[in-house]
View 1: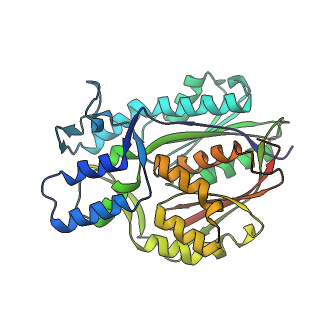
View 2: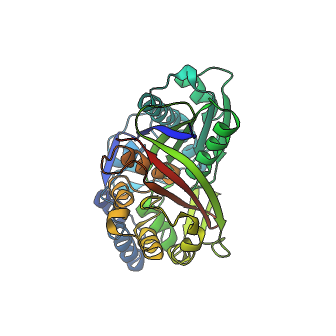
Length: 360
């Protein structure tokens, strides 16, 4: 069998906030001038997001005593990067494990069958890392090979799947568990900088996993056919993710959607036969530019827009949420060519061609 995705699983934190709740909380913060308030309201309202999940239970006004304090009444606090990263270390293993278990269950694979683990995250750093903890928490064999894609950004799920594909080709019978977990909300902060405001309006927390193998599998699967990377001549300073004193700082300039719209058609010309698409929703404007650049219909854009609306931008995990939805869609016919597309710092376009096999 061709190396394929045979199972997908997702997990989100318990705290769920509406976009208007987060917007109104930010608007309450002292010191914001009228221009910043105007930009903030417009950015949140134009994001095409209804709800987002967060590990920051205190944002809802109700948090256990051990939780990171980010809110005092209506005032948002500004913890240090060390404090935010410690919360990442405390909370992210559970999301990695929950998503991994869900994917294994969906694939009908036992923990003892997993031969390789590929973990992904850009929202926290620690060692021993999530790859080792996943082996422990899921009861995988100690000799399971482990690889971690760190700080690659929103596009990272695609090269992680590419790595899983390469492993499955090189070692027939391998079972590769790919898990992405991002706690983007740990890095929310109040700012008058329009680029920081846009980031605050988009990012959320979540985890997703996929099982990749060339073993025989009954039921729906996504064959992994081809992957490509394209690096833009522009964008090196327009999509940036750096470590600051008060969290990781995301820069997203207004040039990002324009660069994506201008270059996406050439980057994925080899996918001209794709009729279904899983596109990382970097934001509403990014999806709009992709739709225009590739001439896609609203029906083709629907899976990406629906995930953005329900979950926000969960960085690397988001495109796997879209694949999870599409794997369970009975309208997606056997033999359909599916285009996989995500964008990361650089500006990098990561893409892949998947073939739908079997029925949902």
